[in-house]
Amino acid sequence: MTEDTHPSTHPPLPPTTEDDRVSWLRLLRSRRVGPSTFYRLMAEHGSAAGALAALPEIARAAGARDYTPCPVEAAEAELRAARATGARMICINDPAYPPALAEIADAPPLFWAMGDVAILARPMIALVGARNASSLGLRMARALAGGLGEAGYAVVSGLARGIDTAAHVAACDTGTVAVLASGVDIVYPAENAGLGDAILARGLRLSEQPMGLVPQARHFPSRNRIISGVAQALVVVEAAAKSGSLITARAALDQGRDVLAVPGHPFDARAAGCNLLIRDGATLVRSAGDVIEALPAGRAAPLRPALAEAPPRPAQPKGARATTPAPPGMPVSPPPDRRGLRETALLHRDILDRLGPSPLAEDQLIRDLAAPAATVAPALTELELDGRITRHPGGLLSRGA
Image (tube, rainbow, N blue to C red; front, side):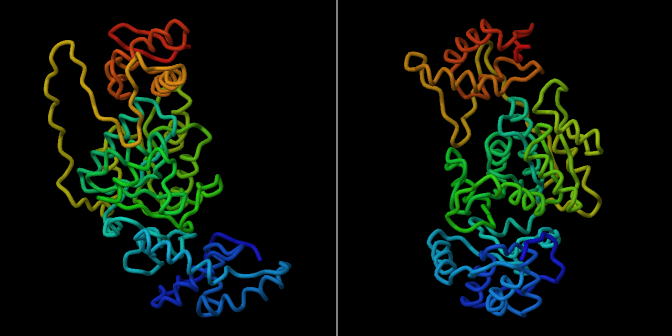
């Protein structure tokens, strides 16, 4: 018995009793049963209970010995864990199940949701990108997510470091959906625990994985198909030529979603994937307005007023440095006199992660780091002396050659 990824039958009606929910969970959590096998078994045997009864014989016929479906106790324990954390099971054909997700070839038969389930009825745009994002990439992600949120779209991403985090932070007040590779009750990476809690207040966390599961590498590609599956379009901000973001882009194309990308400097490896997507036909994105304009007529249904120009920032006194609060989970640098070797190395890494071949203003870098200028300035000098960054006229910085 092997797992395929293309259901050939109409999705079944959602379970209506506790026993049905236990049976659905048992069938889906049974070894070698993926979405397509789940749907096929349900169609052949009429119910999850009937499929479970037939599963051992089907497994024997396929050459699997000593096959045992998922135990009743395991499914009941998962349901108890969900109730304890306030998670809701949403099954395919449930009124709350996103219609766009139900259309994809390997739609999850069920997923767990925590937060505001009503957000699933809103138009959604997925925004993904590099974990080791540059400062310019993070700024672009925040601008796109904020603009799309103001225009009425819920922003979908994967709660990873970098671009995902920036997108969720910017869209927290307007509504964001975090699709997890872990159980819906486990925030990964742990540094985003605060952000995960903030999302529950105005948005939603969802996952098809069992409650309490800590993610492994194989869970992320599966998660990515849901990120693109719930959305009308996918925007890639920064991505290497071989990256999880490009896996998501391929899934989006397979699902018939629009794929858009932010261009980057040809010498920056973090922009290689986006530049490839644009070369191959993805829509080039400069702003949230570009994303909205690219949606086919009839597919955009914003719930808020049209995108408006952001008010100008108040003028800063000459010589003053503007500061912005750090996103949830981002560490704030300690004063220079308390900084040790480890903290210095971390600061150097953060600076280099935010710089690329395209020059960036030093003031903007300091704001993005959310660290005191007196702490960042000596680190910049050290990196410059080491040849790892280059200064340009006008107070601009880039990574060294």
